[in-house]
Length: 489
Image (tube, rainbow, N blue to C red):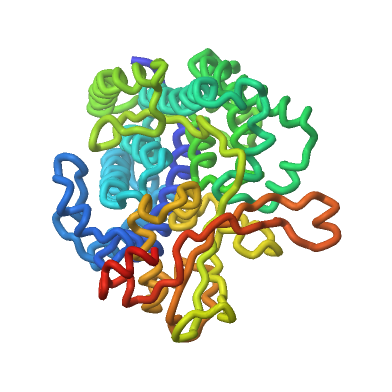
């Protein structure tokens, strides 16, 4: 068994950073899960219960599909995350620290698994599976003064490797713009939720964009092999990964994808390298308990067995990205932005208080927290927090029909009802009382040029490209005269 005595600081830093991400994830669940996938959500939890078995997508909410259970689970996750963030198990004497740590991280994993498996479309992102896979391995790291099992740190490096190398492979296979090095000329403008720096990054020179695209390939395709090298090469690979992910965090909003990758990169360091760059020191450690070593070996065997399908997929010409191969999300395949959209489309939802729309009707727009509806509004910084509805609106805008997104007509109905939980997901609501009609228009958006922005103060220019949903009332959406309702959509 490898000696983990040189990784006490690495474990402590990793656990506290992971706890912070769990905290954010559970806060997102507490604030958003019920209006999105709760009892009366845009995709009601009954839909998950009726169409999915416990064995296919296990979740506590399959047994208790109620908003009360969802709220209790979310806030319990927040509380447990805070305990992990302050390193609660380390306060206990050694005989109890590791069992307490294992129980704490196991509860966090089980609670979050319940949200991911019941969250349907709104939880269908690669960083959900990666948080679960990472959180599962955290169960077996131990706590207190005992040394962590070194093999579990190697398994964390294996997660990091599949995340980075899988992303690199799918880019080379997926889109010509990655091969001709033009991808970053489009990325900053068309990414799901741009941030304040995205506009400035977009307006760098073509040469800059080609160099950063080439750098992307180096960091994702070559650097990952050094994660498993001896120190200091492993740490240098970690530094390169952290720098790369840091740049993505500065220039975009990708929930906790980049932050979690940085947390995983902590496993590429040793205590010696951390003490060389940080004003910290590691205490004396005691040997890893035999039961924890045995569990670490068993987990390693399990992970190796479950890694076969993800590894085959990663190396396949028909590689699929961001897929879980088991219902517990223990070993997954990753990959981001295999294709790059060249044009940006947005859905703008508007309402009116008029009892019957006319050519002279005044329409007022709903503003979402992360979407560039108002061209004069500065793009927000929201990551590592995750705006789940805003992300799905980005996907919905790629399709010319709302029927590709079954939650979208229900969103319109919620706006017409003035549903408070749904309205809380928005930035601004232009009505004191619910509107009589809503409509949705599809727009093409592009960044203003530096000259245009200096003259107008706008971040975006836009033009309508088609009707997404015609003026629609609550009566239409509820199916009173269903033919009329379907025709109007």
